[in-house]
Image (tube, rainbow, N blue to C red; front, side, top):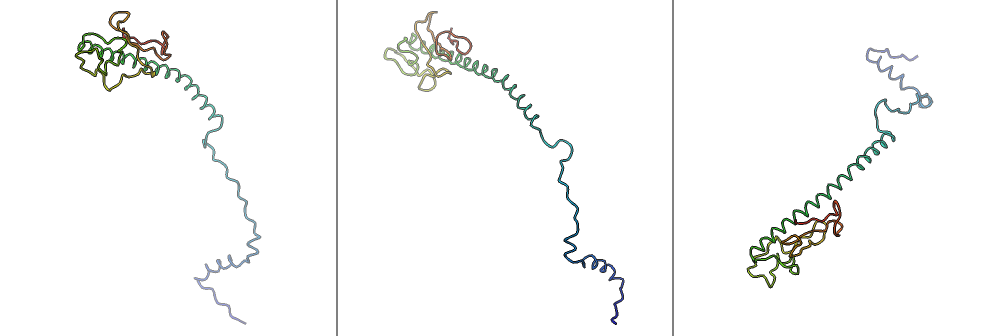
Length: 177
């Protein structure tokens, strides 16, 4: 008979490990494993629902619907104010022209006389505006000029956004007097 080695104090922990790994691979494969549960969302705010997103979009649409007309009105008023400032600036240039030449340019000479010397103008000391051209009104149309004007002096005006006589708001004429 063979003699079994006596367990020592060091071999006791290794015996437990040996018992654990001594099982055959078949037994390990057939062992039942606990089923994993599908992960569930934690309770609490994790994202937005479709209804919440739709409500936010409706609110944004209402705000845009209220703000857009005001912004358009504001921009239209800004163009009218810019046209008024340009009319005043061109009026100051016409006054300088009159001081040098002695009279305002005729209707046929027009505002072009402020940047190019007309043949009939003596003592012309221009150009009387910045640049070599007369600016267009904020709507892209030319300013209208007539001399002599209906109310004395000259008439300088823009016909507004619609480029037609009369009108209201953005379509109103912008005049020097």
